[in-house]
Length: 99
Image 1 (cartoon, rainbow, N blue to C red):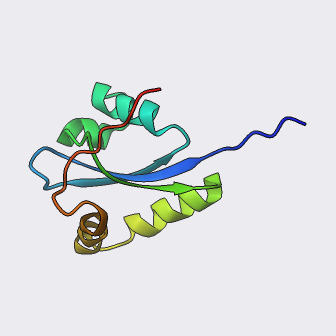
Image 2 (image 1 turned 60 degrees about the horizontal axis):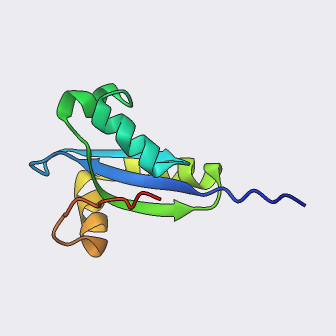
């Protein structure tokens, strides 16, 4: 039996000045962050140089990740910042470990 375990992520990016937030979801966080950095992922992140990963959540289904993204996108900006600061109080860029 071949079980494929999928992992999804809901994530928040910001710019170097920590003034802009972007919410997204993906099943491959490392690849998606690389796409944001190269400018091929989103017009918004390219326009505002939003490439610093500052928060992410691990979810078990695409639906959960998409729903969480939608929920966070509807939050006030201050609520999003408070969520990030609970886990990352200094707003440091999260470096992903490459396998």
